[in-house]
Length: 257
Picture 1 (spheres, rainbow, N blue to C red):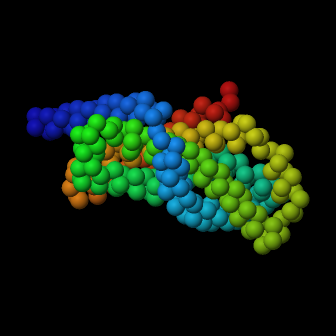
Picture 2: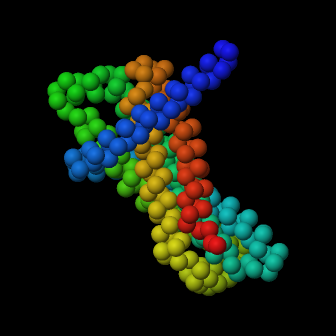
Picture 3: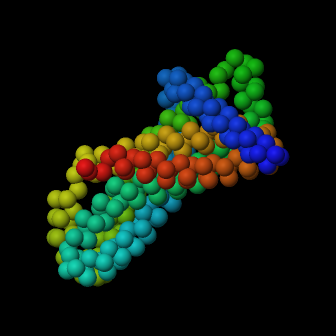
């Protein structure tokens, strides 16, 4: 009986958390029109620029691996000239948005959670409310909007650097024909159905990761342990959410009857 009671209490607590998250996200969206442009730009620099190095380096090495694995797979069927197509579609459709979102959650998401959690612990958010300043409009909305803008840009950079990395491995190192690499890629990759859907994925991932990071920091217990636990929760929940959303978006975008 105690086990059933514990399970029921846990389920109810999770449902309550989901409800609070939904209310928080709705209030954040309503506060977006009041976000100051200068603060949004500053947060884009903080979130996007400081994540650029890890995104670019990761994209380069992912491109290296895709170039090697793709060549060794395609050469069995005499289709090594299609290496550029394989790499480009893999990156712009799937790996670019997903890997960027996972890295974004680990780098920018935890930074946002820690920052908001420390503001909660230092009673800065409570002080804003005492002065009649809405923390959602002043603090949360600019960061949410900045993450929403930064995510697709970082994903495109990841994909572009990954394609260059695959070219470095496939053409100069292995010896694949340079003209076939680029020409077949240009002919197979569609701007709207491939790149456009990848950008849509990035926008959804950016919205989800930033909402989870900000909500977790905003509701964190005002203690060092609470902030540490919140940052861990951000990474775990954001990563699982990205993978789940990726499946649903891929099923809706690329499934053909």
